[in-house]
Length: 448
Image 1: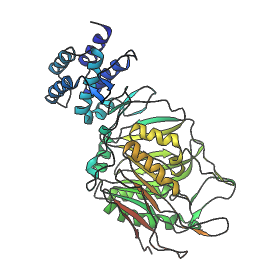
Image 2: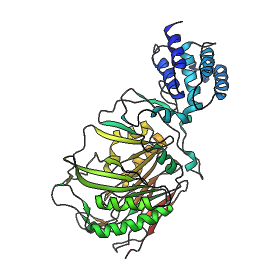
Image 3: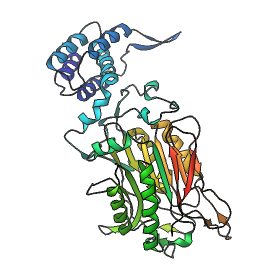
Image 4: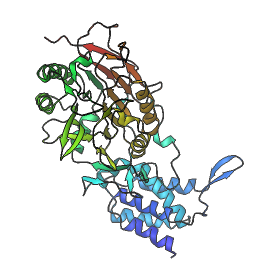
């Protein structure tokens, strides 16, 4: 046997899981002479396929195999199949695609079976998942991964990590089962807006600032506990805005999550604080009865002609992807979503849920970035913005969106404003979106 034959047989015979078998076969294909001509080639009539009959036989064989993992008999049958009627390189590539199509729902669990929290290395294989289409019960999605044409050195659900010098990607699968139970049941998303104006937010003076927080934390806690208690009774996923909480309020909201009769995910906004001697803006995502929250450190500070958010991001910045078997969750904070490389990384890794606390007087750019994520990874997205009223330099009132939602349906991401207009104060409230629906609404809460 030639080198390719030996490598192909080893990839099949030594793989303990379907994921590792797919990766091994893909590695055989990637090691080919780049001038190799595969079964897929151009003709006058477009693309024709010399291996269709072989692959149909392989599909029929694989369909009879258990999803729990390959048996010795399975491996032997696949080795014999791969040796018959195909070059070893083409057989490796074709069989990798057949295994990918049949067994991809098992890939994530196999990938993280012996490591739950790690940095994804450049050049490393990683699995992606199809968007959970059961979350979209009304309309069909805009696109499907199996309809796309991935690079020739990848499979539909197995990708290769490219170099992104500005970012480290951390994979965290420690709460995989909890996330699956919440996210796969999700039917409603909520973005909270607790404050009417900047007068309710304490912003330190100076061109470099840190320590933004609610002006009256006791009142803010009462507002958020009321809103989030109601929102969590209706929705599986709730997002509180940037710098709308203190650590004490986060603790109060954890009690609300723990007291809920149903499993819920609450992104409890973000906090300006000092962590291990560095000024940070940290978002906290809360799960029921979990001792540690999910966290995210903001890496793109707010900056204007006169002001700069004085935070100290890591270099390279870390993007944490919280994994479950069917979902990929990432958290961003406001301007993070405007970093094109970061959005590219999220799309590349297949993040299909991104939750973004924000505090911005301008929200027109969020829809475009969420729309890009929809195109890249069928991402469901929520931006929760606060407060309702801002002022420009002349004192004129500005009313940015309270929320921006995205989902992989026809049409643009949805931008939501509170009901009511003008400069009159409005009570706090929240925006809701039912997945699969084409409209969202704002609900006011009259809190004494």
